[in-house]
Image 1: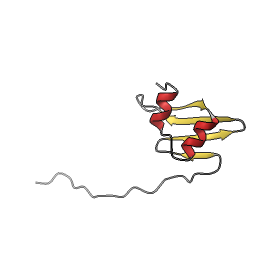
Image 2: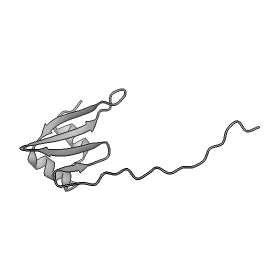
Image 3: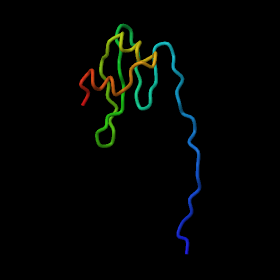
Image 4: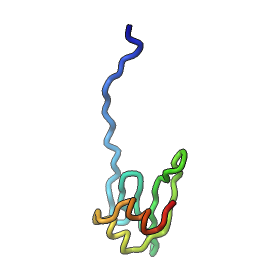
Length: 80
């Protein structure tokens, strides 16, 4: 007796394209606003809140070059 069947599916490619003033990671992004640089990320709290913190221009550029990850930001900026 078979109660249900499953069908393998595919996820659509929803990756946003990186632009001059914004870089997108998996569940996070860095964005330049005038002379400020912001890290926007989904928190690990229950129901995952969207949070943001100000970062340095140097860290913004490192993220755009792929040299800084969300883990690196969390450690450096004591994100909780």
